[in-house]
Amino acid sequence: MYRRFRVILIFSCVFCMPTIIPEQEGRDYWYQKAKTAIQERVTLFGNKREKAKNVIFLVGDGMGITTITAARIFKGQRIGKFGEDLELAWEKFPTLALTKTYNLDAQIGESSACATALLCGVKSNFETVGLDGKGRFENCFSSFTSRVDSLIDWAQQEALYSHSSSRYWEDDSKVPTISRKSCKDIARQLVEDDPGRHINVLLGGGRRHWLPKVSHDSEAPYEEGRRLDGRNLIEDWIRDKKKRGVKAEYVWKKSQFDQIEVEKVDQLLGLFSYSHMDFDTDRDKSENGDPSLSEMTAKALAILSKNPKGYFLFVESMDSKMSDVDNMPYSTLLYGNGPGFNIPRLFPTNLSIEEKNSIHGAAVPRKWATHGGEDVPVYATGPLSSLFFTGTVDQSYIPHAIAYIACLAEYKQRCVINNDIPNSSQIFQEVIILLDELRWCLPAAYSVKKKQNRRIRL
Image (cartoon, rainbow, N blue to C red; front, top):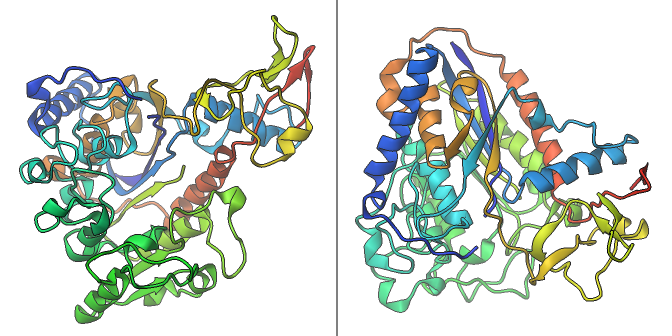
C-alpha cells in the first residue's frame, strides 16, 4: 500500500577516540548489521507488504531531549499555557526510537560523519563525508576506495552527493594544494558530478564557495568569493541546465524566490547567504532577505510533487528553580558546556528571556557548545514505521530501514504495486506544520522558571 513516510532525526554530536575495529571500517559490516536487524524485525512481526512512495527526511541538528523539552515548554507558555503539557507536532507521531550517534573514531559524533551514517548506512570517521571507515581525514587518496552510495543512489537517482576526506573542503581554497588535482572540492562535485547536477531543488547558503576570489557577492558587495580556480560555479550550474534543456532557475533573495512558478521550473538553486544562513529569529524577512525554512520546504515539495514516481526530500535545520546551595534561580534544563558558564554563576530573570540572545547556564566554559553524546530520538510515521523504528538502533541502520520501506536497492522487488496513493495535499500540509514547529527549537532564548511551585510566564 502506498502511504506517506516521514522521519525526523534529532542527533547530537566530542572528542574521545575509541579503538577502531578493522572489520567495522568497511561498508559490508554495516550493511550486514542493518540487514540482520531488519530481518529480525520482519521475522518477529511478519512481512507486511506496505510501501512508502515518498520519503521526507528531516534532521534537526542539535535537537536532543533537553532542547525538545525546552522548546515544548517555551511554545506552550508563548500561547498562554503552562507549557509542560503541550505536544510538539512530531511528538504526535506514533513511533519513537533512540539512535546511537558515535563515529568510528569518536565517542561523540560529528555532523558530517553522522550525516554519512544517516544517508549512506555506514559508520565513518570524524569529519569525513560520504566515505566508509577506510576514508581518513584530509587524506585525499583514501577517498578513492572508500566512497559509499546513499539513499538517492539506491533510488537509482545517483548518489547524495559528495565524497570528501574533509567536511571543510567546501571550495578549492580549502583543499591542500597537493590534493587539488586529484580531489574535487564539495561545491564542484555538486555542480559537475552525479548526483549534484541532477538534484531538483537545492536551497541554503554558502555563496562564497561558488564564487571566484575576484568576484564580489551580490548581497554583500564588500565580500569576495573564495574559489582560487577562477570559476563561477553559479554560472556553470546555469549553463549546464541550459545545455541539457532543463527548466531551471537561480535565486538569491526572498523576492526572487517568491516569484518562482513551480509549474515552469524543474530544477531550482537558491543561495540566500554569503556564508551560513541566519537563525530564524535573526532572519531578514523583507523582500531582500531570506525565505523561512517552512517556505523553502513548501516550494521544494511543490516542485518535487510533480514527479508521479515519488520523491526524496532531505531537510536540515538546526525550567529554573532555586538552588539548594546558594538559593539563586537556575535553569532546570541545562547544557554541559557553552558560553553560559560564568563565575559567579549567572541566574535567569524574567527580563532576560525577552532578549533573543539569552543563554542557558553551562558547567564548562566554551565559546560555542559542543555536540552531546547521548542517544537521540527518531520520530517516524507512515507505513511500517512501527515495525522498524522502535528500540535503540545505530544511525547507520536508518537509511537501510527506509530502503526497505520504500522498496529501494536490494529491497526493490519486495513490493506489490497498487494505486492506493495518499492525497498529496495532505502530505504537503502535515509536513509544513512540522517545519513550523521546528522554529520553537531554534532560539537559544528560552528558559523555564519555577519558584515555590509557581509557574512564571515567559
